[in-house]
Image (cartoon, rainbow, N blue to C red):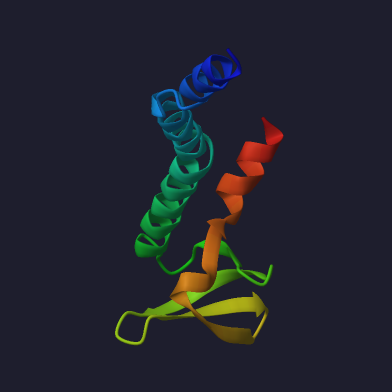
Length: 109
C-alpha cells in the first residue's frame, strides 16, 4: 500500500515540463516587449538623428555639453561643436545624442 502511494506521488511530480517551458517563453516575451524592443527603437532614433546632423543644429553631447554644430567631418566621424563664442570642441559623432529644440519642446508639453 505504501509503495502504491509513493509511485502515485512520483508519477504526479514527473508531470509534463510543458507548463515550465510556456512560462519561460512568456517571461522572455514580456522582457522583449518592455525592455529590449523600446531600447532598440530609441537607438534607431538616435542613429537617424546623428545621420541627419547639419551645421547650425543645437545639440547636447553625451557628456551633457550644450552647443551648436559648426562642422561635420564624415571621413573621421567627428563633429566640431561651438560651446561658447569662439570655443569649439571636437567630439565623436556617436556622442551627439539630442537636438536641444526637440527636447525642450517635449518638456513643455
